[in-house]
Amino acid sequence: MADLSEGQAAPDFEGKDQYGNTVKLSGFKGKKVVLYFYPKDNTPGCTAEACNLRDNHSVLLKKGFVVIGVSPDSEKSHRGFSEKFSLPFPLLADQDKKIMQMYGAWGEKKMYGKTVTGVLRTTFLIDEKGIIEKIIRKVDTANHTEQIL
Image (cartoon, rainbow, N blue to C red; front, side, top):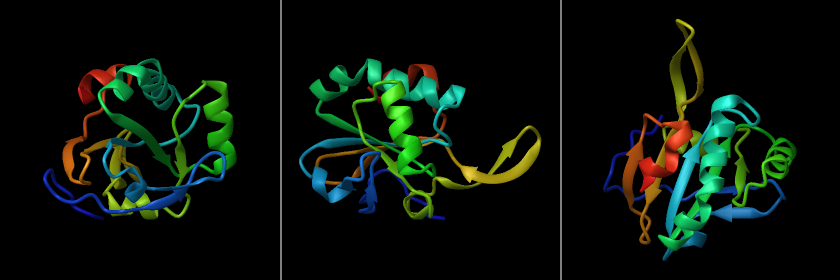
């Protein structure tokens, strides 16, 4: 598991979005990136987080941010989730968990008192030069945009 910190270069990644398009971090040089990792499409917390980012998308764009979501769900699952909630940003299918492992967003966590391995809900704010500006590890799904701004 990667142990990234603020001020480090963000690892470049490549993945397929909900429409089969290839998305690379390096393709966003000159823009600020909100890279958020979430456990599962169509679950209450993940839906709240995605809809908060959707509802504030124009504010984020005005501040120079692009939003990219990543979870281990398939492109097909992402497409359904994205269309159901009119999400205006790419959701990357990371079924082999490569991107999540690069960013330390896959690992052990406590769920209902048990230790399980899964997605660690985390958001990385990456600046125009590809440097990690901020890491949000305690995500408030309903008010995530406020945390970002």
